[in-house]
View 1 (cartoon, rainbow, N blue to C red):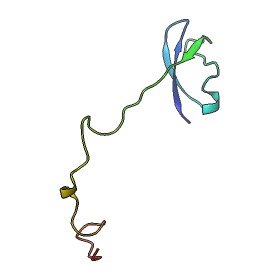
View 2 (view 1 turned 180 degrees about the vertical axis):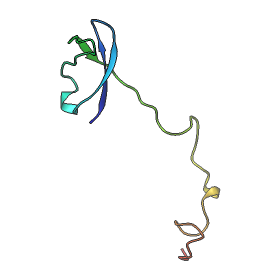
View 3 (view 1 turned 90 degrees about the vertical axis):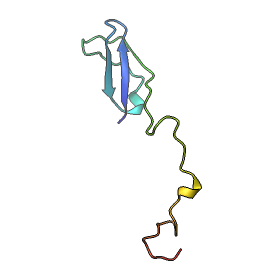
View 4 (view 1 turned 90 degrees about the horizontal axis):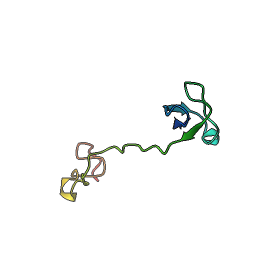
Length: 74
């Protein structure tokens, strides 16, 4: 199940809940017990270094797609 982030409009607390996608917009109770929350738009980090680019074609392994140590003669 996805993890959603919410902010309570009453106490300004930010909290997370793991719930089904179909329940993502349902009212969420904050840890203090208030039922006045709004779902936040969460951002996530992508894997990889910023500004990195794929390796040049000359850096590709020699031989077939499985590398030169395989011995499959491709």
